[in-house]
Structures are given as C-alpha cells and as structure tokens.
Length: 567
Image 1 (tube, one colour):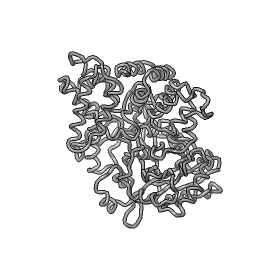
Image 2 (image 1 turned 180 degrees about the horizontal axis):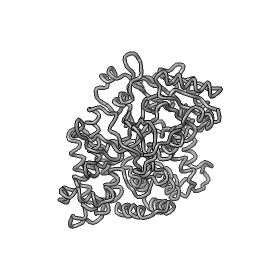
Image 3 (image 1 turned 60 degrees about the vertical axis):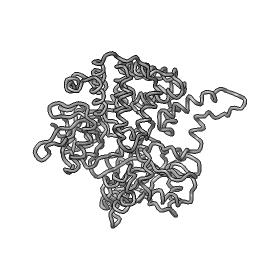
Image 4 (image 1 turned 135 degrees about the vertical axis):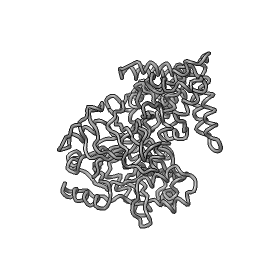
C-alpha cells in the first residue's frame, strides 16, 4: 500500500525543485512504484484535485473550516494572525500549527485511506451534513503527521504550489507509462480526469505484451478511436480571443464560419440508450436542474450522440436575460417546476462531438456542423445564427447585426478545425464588442461608508503562463449590487486564508468577468500593466481559475491599443 507520508515527501521534494524535467521525473517514478488504484489517486491529489473530475463540488470544505479544526486540535486559535504573517502559504500555516502539537502521530495513513475519507465526506448529505463532514475531517487530521497535514490541507483547498501543473502531470504520466507525451495528451483530451487516465494506461499494461491473441491496436489507441462512453463528459473546446473580424480572417486564412456568440451557460449533452445526461462547463452533472433539456433530447430520433451547446435564460417574451439568471438554475434540485416557470431557458446547440457510437472530434468542423444541422431539422433545440462569409466586409456586417441584436459578439470557427477538448487553440476565435477579461479574485478589502461590513474592493489577477503564478492587474468595487456584495462577502470569507490591515487574502476560486476602458502601464503591479475603470459585469461560477485570461492576453490587448496610458 502507498504511504501518504511518502506522497507528502514527494510533494515536498517537488516544491524544492525548479527543473520541469526533474519534477516530471520525480512524480513519474513515484506513480510507477504505487499500486494501480493508488497511482490513479496520487495523480489527482498531486495537482490538488481531491476527487474525480466533476465531483469536487460535493466536498464543500473551506480553508476556514480546515484552519478551525486544526487550531482547535492544537490550541492555536489565538495565533492565527502571527502564523499567517510568517507562513508563505496556507499549507505552511497548517504545518506551523501542527508543530505545536505533542506528541506527533506516527505516519500510518495510506493514500487509499485518505482518498476513501475524502470520498466519504463528499457523499455526506442531509441533516447536519456540514457537522458530519467536519467530524470525518478532524479524525483524518488527528492521524496526520506534520508533513502529511501540510499537504492534506493543500489538497483540500486545491492549491499545491509545488510546481506540478496538469501539463507537467501529463509528462509524469508519460514517464510512468513509457509512452510518448503526444499520446498521453491525446488520451487526456478524451479522458479528462487524470486518475482515470492512469487507470487506463496502467490497467492496460498486460495487454501491451505481444500474445497470439493480441490485437494490433493498443488499448489506448482503441480508447481514442472507439465508441464514446456517453456517460463520461469530455472537456469543452475553448476559444482564443481575436481583436476584430479582420484579425480573425487573417488567423483563419478566410476559411471560416461566423456564429452569434451567446451569453449563456455551456452544456454538454449525452444521449444514449440509458437516457440523457447533461454536464456543465466544469463537467459537473446538472441533469436534474435542466429537465427542459432532457425532454428536448429524449425526443430526438438519434439513439447515441454527444452535443455541445449553451442554455440561456429568457423572459416572458422570449428575449435573453442576464447570464446570472441562467446560472441560478445550475445545481438546483429542489423547486424545479417553480424555477421552470420563473426562469425559463432556451437551448442552443453549436457542435456535434459524437454520433451513433463514433467520436467526431477529429472530423472537420464543417462536416460536424452539417450532421448537426440535419439532426436539428426535427429537433426542439435551436442552432445559433451562422454564415460562411465570402469577404471581411460581409463578416463585419454580420458582426454589426449581431451587436445590434444584443449579442456580445461572434465566434469565428475554422471550417477545417478539429474539436480539441480542453484546448484553447486557434481553431475557434471569439470577437466581442465589450472589452472584458475573465479574472480571479485573490483578495478583497473591507468597505467603508455604504459598503461598511462587506468585502467590496476586489483584487483581480490574471495568470502568468510562463510561471503559472497569479499576477494582480487591478482592483474594483464597481458593478455589484448590495445583495451581490453581501453574497460575495460570505463566499470570500469561506475562502479566507489570512487577513491584515483591512485586506482579506482568499483562495483564488471566484472567477469574474471584468469590463474595462483600457490597459495602462503600471509599476505598481508585478505584470507591469493595470486595468483602467474596471467593473465586474458577471460572476462566472461556470469557470474555474485555470480558465482565466493570461498576462499574455492582456499584453496583446495593450499592444493593440492606439493610446497607451501610463500610471
């Protein structure tokens, strides 16, 4: 059995290593030594993923709760501010607390035990569920050594900060399985969850040895080319930003289609003999929340298919409502009939990922769309308005009509592009009228005056792709209502890691869409740039921090500005 102490020691070593190659080697060698199931679990845990992809939401354990449990165990309730001032991150703060406890437990936990306890907490529902979850968590921390407790805390808040990203984990898995990284990346596109990927690779080892009965196609190749498992969602394909129609034409060499860009919530819909299942952008199942979608897809004439689309909220006249209105439907399981009446939705479908037992992700977009259009002729869903423009002028006219009709912009899609799950390639481009970015809140200031008692000035960060670190690019208190401030305060306090001089540092989990007037040079921020007149236009609960805009995106937008102000 794999020791959780050994897992924590490897994580500690990763944090002391700056070489990407060495990080991948260390992790790959460790995974190769573990039993199959524990290798799969360790791959998830090492990137801060407590449960399988799509299941993390059920855990609902905040950093604040972790701190309270460990502080009560160690009698360190009064030391919080001093410890956070000395610690470099949340895990080290927990480590410092645990060092005050005597005696220290012997490290007896296994990786499997930790995984089982986390899974047990995720399954707890109903009356006093929070109290019961925390009781299980306390039992777990009571058995951890100092080093184990440090990394258990990091896993629980999803911030390992030891240099291991999803991309590096794929390199580690490639080393573990002795397979080309290109093959591993391709398999991950289809599998999505790192643990399940390890299971498939390590579980197929026996079949890779040549035998008289062996097929010429490896299990991994069979997985890639065979029938899609419709109950397992794929990561959605993502779009890169383009400044305008002319730039989109240049990037896609004029071989493109344009579609209205919808301000809705992304959904992936799986239809097979067992029924219909609906998944969110972050791969959480939301079938029970969207019975209208289930009804539409149940009536289709095709037996097996995977669709990519969006749902938008509409008013009594069928006009689109704000993005936040549709997000109120996601994850709800109670009062669905009432919500259907109060917050009706409309389903748009824009891609076909699988049909009749065959994955279509390598099929060119134009072919996928033709098959989708044929299905749509007798279906209850709507296709986004679309053209294949013959010129930049025609495309710009389509874009102008889209903006005039109230859409936020258009999508430009290369007719020859494959569907690349989880990738933000140049096959799809988004052109929006408003200047907006998706950023993550990393801290917030207590307000004053009318905003007294609320966390209401939000520190916004983008991601530096080179280092993987989050870099602040501005602050704002604009865009939210009093009700929003109240809800945001509760949400951020649950993510609190430390507080000093009126500023609360939080785990970077809350993604917001931020509008701005322009970007300026600013020595006050590490990225050298800041947003001017920023305001929050939406809380993107459908997106995770890994999907936020990058410093490179902001630098590109700055370069395209005619006027380049300086702070």
